[in-house]
Image (cartoon, rainbow, N blue to C red; front, top):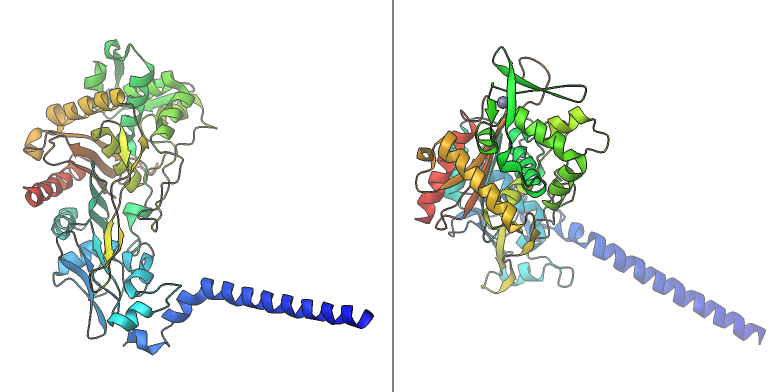
Length: 462
Ligand SMILES: [Zn+2]
């Protein structure tokens, strides 16, 4: 009896060890298989270090990345190469959010189940189609004219991102020897910026929702030396001009800091936070195409004093926005309050044309009620009509808001200039975000960039 049970125990032990071993091997395979199969020592995948990956094309079939004679190569147009680099990604994986890195398995045809089956079968990986328009990206790259920053354009009905340019950038076929800060970063997905006056859209939304008397209110902006000021709590919020007494539409047109600091003070931190959080602040967005994560826009007023809330109401204090989220937010206003999920990859196909993945429009909820969205649209339309000028966006019935964000207390620090807006002409259902870093007033830098990019959008869709 004793010896049998000992034998049984040994057998159990053996079975256990075997199972544990298999489990460990399986676990290691599923975790590391990608790395092992893609190891550069694995020569049949690589020729001269470049993997035989599939093509990446823009929405019109223009090839942005391909493999020729074993070498990874890019668009024939040097400006398109630089304009689309942070989105397409580099061959070495420096640009972590680039398609070539995020979709490496799909491009090489690798699956955990089949290993490199596809690659052996077809001799190359799968092809990826983007929603991007290379010509609009090129126009945006030119419009940035050497400035650092970001431009993003998306179809607010569908969520298709048609333009992303993040600068500084470089030509992947002529990589500079000197590295520039931020050149491996796709600021559209990863950037966080002080929103400045573009945040007044949120303060206005909260006022529209919570202050039934808003349209009858008058806001005071008085001061000296050309600068208005308003006392909030223990200190002052300053304005860029002296706007005297203005009703809400005029105050929004003139971007009066006194008016919006007063609104934030009246609303209080809870209401302002509630409006912002409904519109996606303080929550991580879903990954783009399930693969590329965005930085999270934040409005943190827990420890804010009255004066801090006043500054937050004009987009200063500690508030930060991510360009992709801000574009989603602007799009929701254009779209009657409903936010759609942005996406960049429209489809993935095998070399013989079999669809492996196809993306479509997804609603992600109501960022604003339809009434609030309608009011915001009205006021943003008024800004362009009465202040920035319709001539800048011919035929677009453009709506928008500028921002000039102070990012340092130093006197000679240059601000970031922003523009967020959308075309309300249903023929061109596109929203845009522009950030020009180390700039001057937004009307001189960010708005002209938006003008050029929206002209390219119009050309592409006419
Ligand atoms: Zn003012």
